Every structure is written in structure tokens, then in C-alpha cells.
Length: 411
Image (cartoon, rainbow, N blue to C red):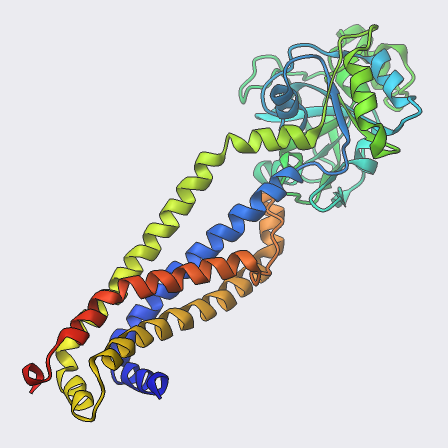
């Protein structure tokens, strides 16, 4: 009966209750969204590259190797000899090896030299393979495959020719004008650094740095990858997929002690976790902002209940005359607050679920956030529980005010 009376009382003050409800709805939705993104963003971040067991490069620190090999940020201190790459490729414990050669750019976008293995085995997200929005992988020395962002920002299409510049800056005074590359493919959006990368062959990297007299021979036969002039001497890093996960630590230790070349092998998962810890401050800021929004809404709820006390003097007096004790009036005010908070929470859960279900694909392709739309979990229940408890606390003042009001003062 108390619940029924509380609902009827709220209906009689529909306008002010609706505004309070919307305020709580927005704040709870923001809180749930931030928590959902916060919990799943780390998992999405760790899936920037998927299925890679080891990353091998020159000794330069775990973070630096991860940043330039996966995120195309920073520069390597040294390269890995191509003989070492072939050793890794032919290792009996290695299933596949993807070479990575960096050092050039195109309008500020990094150029990555690799081979066909990159398009066959590189994965991201939930072990998703790279897909082509248009075209196909490069086949000739002067072919290139560009990421989705490169194509979109520079308005490129398959068949266009581009000129690669020396160095990694947005502006370069050394362009390889004598060796333009033809776009043969455009990758579908991934939400990862792949979208901002220009991919060429290792032979292409070597060819564009040749002298004009040597370059003529390559241009005459651009499909001859066996030409000694375009055989690479080194690569920047190597991404490895192993036949057995149990061999990971054994191979890592062997590569770190390799005598013929200075190598460093790292576990991408460990490096990603270390990198994410550096972003913990951003997480905390988001949580603080969400909590402040919720607190302001709860104070709005308390203010609304306090303001309604004067309007409800007759209502409370009639309840007291009919035999309702001060405790019943106290519980009535708390019940009204709980009804508003629980209703806002339930609608927030449905709203957040609908929004993330609809934006799931867009968030994955544009921002690399592979989020689950399911917010009905233990963590969400804890958030809703905290909201209800906070509602009870902020509603105590108007409830105590109603409790302490004597019947004669209302009459």
C-alpha cells in the first residue's frame, strides 16, 4: 500500500518528478557508459594486435619496441639483420613470421614494408583478419596497400599513384619522386594503427632508395622480386606466431641470448598491460566526472523532495489524522525517492544497451573499441546498488523533515 501511495503521490507532481527522473536517467546512463567503456577499453586496447606470440626487434626497451612495431609511434634504435628474420621464419617452433620495416612516410602517415604474410596472418580485435574494402594485396615492387584512414583523408582510390617521402615527418624535403607507387588495395576500417599505414613490399622499400641508374632496371621489370638490388639487408621488427604457446618463453629466452645478432623478444600482452597502466589517470578522471554528475543529480532529487514538502502539508496532515505515524511518513518519502532512482536505473540499462548495440560496429571501425552491448552483469548491478544507496542517503534530509513535522503545524 505504501508503494501504491508513493506512486500516486509522484503522479500528482508529474512535471517536477519528470525533470528529476530525466536528470537521474542521464547521470546514471553516463556512469554506466563510462564504466562499460572503462572495463572493456583495456581489453580492446590489448586486441590492437591479436594472435602475435612474440615481437622481436633490436634491444631498445619493451615499451619502445611495442610502440614503433604496433602503434607506428617513435623510431627504432637499430634494425634486425635480414638473416635473423630468415632464421626466425625457418625456426621449427615458428608458424609464421611477419617482417616490419619502417623509416619512411607519406603526408605524415607511416610507411610499413612487409610481405604477403602480413595480409594472411595479421589479426586484430577478436582474432579478425584484415579485409579489403577495395582492390587486393600488392603484387609488384611498386604496388602499395593503404589503410582506411589514409584513403579517406587523402581521397585516394585504387589505381592512384603516390610518392613516398624519406623520414617520418608530415613535411619532408626528400621525396622519392623517381619511384611512385600504385595503390592496388584499400583495407577495410579496423580502428587500429593499420588504418593510418601505407603498406609496401620489402623490395619496394629497397627499390625507392636506389640510385637513378639502378632504379631503371627495377622499373623495367617491377615484378622481379629476386633482383639482387632489391634484397633487404635488415628489417625493423618481426611479429611471430608460434605453433605451440608452450614454446613462447623458451623461444623468448633463446632469442634474447642469440649470439649472431642483438635481438630482444617481448610478449605483446605484457607490454600492452604495462602501456595501459600509464593511462590509468585518464580512467580515474572519467570515473570522477561520472560520480560528480550523479551526485549533482541526487542533490537535485533531494531538493525536489524538500521543495515539495510545503506543497504537501495538507497531504501529510491528512495521513497523520488517518493514523499514519511519523515513521510511515518517513518511509513514504524514502519510497518515492527509491521509485524514481530504480525507474531511472532500469531505463538507463535499456538505453545504454540499445545505444551500444547500435553503435557497436561504428565504435569498432572508427575507434577500435570492441565493446559488448551486454550491460547486465555483476559490475552494473554494483553500480545500480551504489546509486540506490546514495539515493537513500540524499533522501534522508527531506524524509527527516517530514518525520519531525508535528500534526498541529500542518493544520
